[in-house]
Image (cartoon, rainbow, N blue to C red; front, top):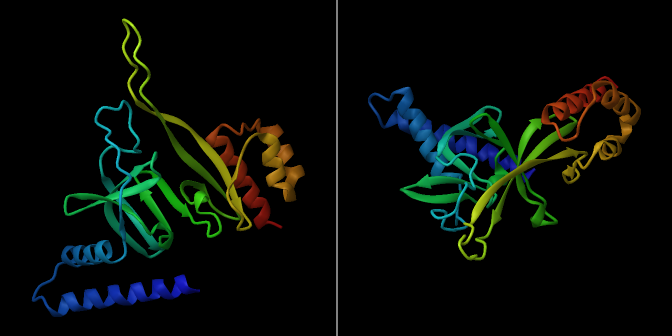
Length: 239
């Protein structure tokens, strides 16, 4: 595939960079090589895009997963991992980074296998037929069926001013995560209730129905969903 060719070219370029660094330095520390590789990756493979700008200073709450840029990891593949400081703007659905004291959004997330920010791992779903479905999702379970969570933030506009009370301030409100299933290379499907779970996992409907009843699974509980989809993936592996 074209993406595989592109990734192989990336690794060739990185190998050349390390070799070039060794040739042009009398003493090159491991830390120096890592910095050279990370800098090369930062400038060469992360395409800076424009951040959707909105002044947050007078707005209550936060649109971010973390307000500060935190040490994160970007995975090109299982063995190609690079460190960089990132923050996830949930409201804008953008992962941001800093370059020369300016803030940019990653504009080519589809080339990365996954992005890890603190204890959360994100993948980017790229729908070629409908760009409105493109989004970052938190990865909870992977296998034959992926369990995903969509972080959500709502923006509440400033309310009208009232006598003796004043206007209610504009506010970012963190909403409950939306849970989705991704399997058979279809678009991620939102989990609405236990009935929808059974319908989505219809090839193991009887087993899933029994498991939901026995374990008292709630489709609104993240740990319950992790338990259920892990069970489903084991059923698929033992077929």
